[in-house]
Each structure stands twice: as C-alpha cells, then as structure tokens.
Length: 350
Image (cartoon, rainbow, N blue to C red; front, side, top):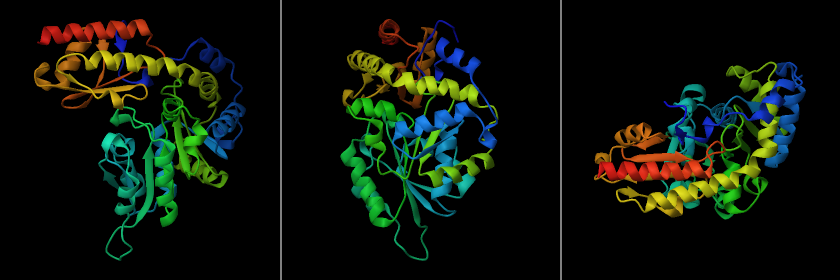
C-alpha cells in the first residue's frame, strides 16, 4: 500500500494530530483498574454528559462496549432483536453467542432502519418452547446501510415497544455524532430513553483508540466488572484518554466537512455509468454503491484491486458493493482526486 494512497476504507484509519500527541505525552495518569486515573475519570465524566447519561465507562473498542451491554441486559438463551446488517451481527464475530449465550434475531429493514411494528411483531411469545426476547438493539448511524440515520420519532416508537414489553433497548451509537449532525439535532436528543449507549471516539471524532459505554450509574458500575472479565481492564490508560478528550471536545466541529465530502463524492459517483448509488441513503460520511455487471464484471474485489493500483483505498461490502468513508485525514482536494481516479478506472474498465 502506497503511503500516498487516498485512504477511504474507514474513518478508523485517522492518525492522532499534534494536539492529541501533546495531550498524550503530558497526560496525568494512575491505575484505572483501581479507579485512580484522573484523565480517564475526566473523560468518562465529559463523555457521559455529552451523551446525556449519568455515567460512562472507557473501553478499548466499540465491540467491547456493545458486548458488555448485551451481556448485562441479556441472559443465556435469550434473543436480541436487531437489524440484519447491524454491527453486532455482521462485525462482532458472533460475540453475543460466544460470550453471553445470546441469539440474534435479525430483521431485514429498508435502509437498515428497524420498523417499530416489525420489532413488536418479532417479540417472542411467552411459551415454554421458545427463546425469550431479552433486548432490542439499534444502530445509529447504520454503518452497512450507508450511514443512514434514525430520527427521533422512529426511535421513540421503538423505545415505546421496549417499554410496553419490559425490554431494555441498547443503542450502538458508534457514529452518533454523525447522526446528530445529519438530523440537525443533539446527541442527547437521540440517546434519551435508551438503557445503554455506546459511542466511539476512534471513528469520526479522530482519536487513535477507545469508546464509551454509557448508562445509569449502577449499570456502569456492573459494566466495569464485565470489562475486567473480558480483559479490558487498563492501567495507566490516561495516555489514551487524553487523546479521547481532545477528540470529544474538538472532533464534532470537524464532522461537517466529512459529510460535505461524502455528499460531493456520492454525487459524482452517481453520474458514473456502471455505478448504482441511491443518493438518498448518503446522510453522513459513508458512501456505499453497487457495481453493475459492465464494470469489473460486477466484482467488488476486482474493482477495489484496480482502484488501489490507482492510489485510492476502499472496502468491500458484498461481492458487488463497495464502501468509501470520508474522514478528517482526507481533504476536499483529495476527494476530487479520488473522483478523477475512479472516473479514469471506469473509462479503462469500459
């Protein structure tokens, strides 16, 4: 991979900037397993406030945050209602089953957005020969649906289903700041009513590592125990939390540029013969498109290999779908270069 490549594989590829590196070098630290790291404590306090929740726990990854929540809300043999392409199903390596004995009940949904009526219909009947529904899980924004977002009315309807049936509802808000920006609202306005919320610092916000699991104070106390059980107890983690604080304080203000770049990229791609892209799905910083059979025989692997040779990195979604993600380390000029390279690739392939 060339160091000059325009990397659009994910917003996880960003590198800490000078301010983050200084903060990391100067961080006041202690042993976080003993609850003695002041920088981690400061991050958790600010992170909880940013999500409108009582408390937060710093975890190494979004996957760990999600799995801690599922473990605490569920019980072995229980079903988790979730969208079919959501992260906990597609990209967490069967962790809910392996770690907590939980079964996903995936619902295919237009644009990746769960229909509240379908969620209610999927709740298991209370009979002795059926697994019980134990949790509803929502992902906002939805990664594999192209960064689509749940607005508050839809969220409120899903939360109401949970309340009617006595079910907790967990929010995988890995990119919740992107969702809030796309909807012109605040993060607390989108997290209100959820029993737990996970969001990432290491995606659009630009930190090198780390996520937060948020909820009621008693929930976070138990989450700390499960984090330790899963091997996530960190010691002088303030060096990481310091970068996370910079990301939390400064990162949201940078997201509009990412969204503008994604829209610019999507509009150009939609005009290219052989590329199928629904512009209505591009709400945040993720662009997913389908290759027609006339372009690289409809093969995402072939297309991405040729694109990498041209100096642009992307990622596969399926055998004929490609994902490109904008982020803070790719400027508008590089987006324009990426567009030109894709246009050139299509001309050659045709």
